[in-house]
Length: 260
Image (cartoon, rainbow, N blue to C red):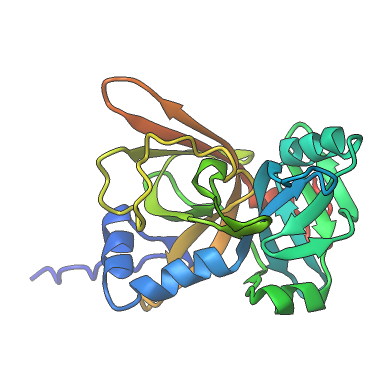
């Protein structure tokens, strides 16, 4: 008599499906996963202090990372390029509600559209942020992802330079994954977007935000890793009304913040 073979266990650290990721986020752990995505990211913006009524010129998002060797921030390189252009007009840089003295760049890559920079422990403490931990890990195609960022056109001025930010948070799927980038599609009618932002709004400003993969151990214990950094949010106005978001693979960044 043939003994039925046992099902082969999943490998350690395998990515979970979108359906399972949604079940996790919509269950008791939902608030925790949303907090993970938003607490490791913050709006990065700048303004001209000499204006009669200072207003933000541009903004992006930064992702805060802690490795066993360094604390640093990551954003899209095009965000920093815009800051450098505007800096010639005399601007002040602000992270969330804290003024900072410029960016101390560690490394930058135009090819990957990534820039890393030093961060002070005190700044992270003042902002109440919780850095996402090393190591990074690529997701598999079709697996569940968490996204977060700060769209520029949703900010509201409570009073001059006191800004209420409406963060973007979503759970979606990795459409295509290469060693260099992750392409993500979010249908406009997806009920997994955890705020009131319509997906057909301009998401400019979320560049630099985290792309977080959800994985499992062999014993089906879920854990998360930084998988990528958003570099290109673009609304595809077609019959399917799909938000197409591109992220650079985080594995290109070393534990010292240099970019391969």
